[in-house]
Image 1 (cartoon, rainbow, N blue to C red):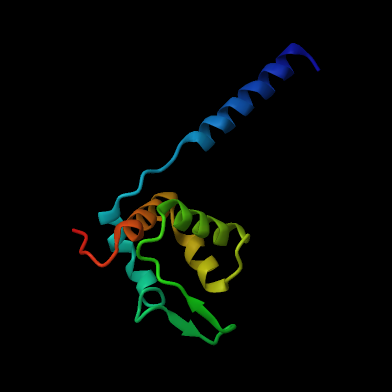
Image 2 (cartoon, helix red, strand yellow):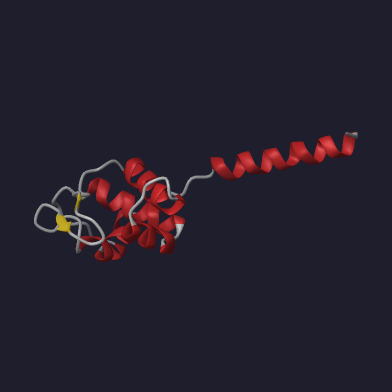
Length: 114
């Protein structure tokens, strides 16, 4: 390997590290807008149970950690967590929407968010 190849690899690694270090800050008020798609299953009368495609319980989201919720959505998107409905939802969310929803539910413990 020549000096130029090593330099190119080092620069690529630096760019990757910088991209991973950037985090998107969530806006709870903006997350409230997007939460409508979540409310039908989550937080409705203590959570929702469905029987298609399998029986599962949709947990309440209010008060969960923002980091936990964001990671869950990313895991559904990547396939690390498996649920066809949540995969479809996670696939259409932008990183900003994920951050906003996570921020919204982290502070939504029954109070109104303006």
